[in-house]
Amino acid sequence: MNIDNAWSIFLDRDGVINEKLENDYVKSWGEFIFKHGTLEAIAGLGKLFGHIFIVTNQRGVGLGKMTEAELNEIHNQMVASILATSGKIDKIYHCRDTDDSSLYRKPNTGMGLMAK
Image (cartoon, rainbow, N blue to C red):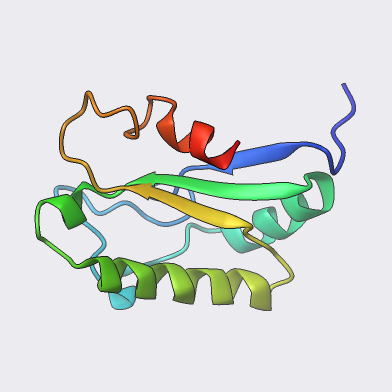
């Protein structure tokens, strides 16, 4: 199997890119901590894949624990840090729905279909 720039990769955020907070939500940039080696890994993935997408459940927005603007600030800072280390993110899709049966909540396919 040859992976090239025609391929896309989808990454989760919490617990994959950043440390997941137990029984809480990352609600500010100050609470966001990259997992060890993530920045280097994303830079490497950018050399293999044509597109890198993040798909992330963000129930905390739907529950009113944080605002959409706060989430966007976290994502803006995260992408800036990734770009500063030669990585790239083409687009971030997030689902703020609170109902697990939502088409857009992972592991359902809605965010992937949006990216398509």
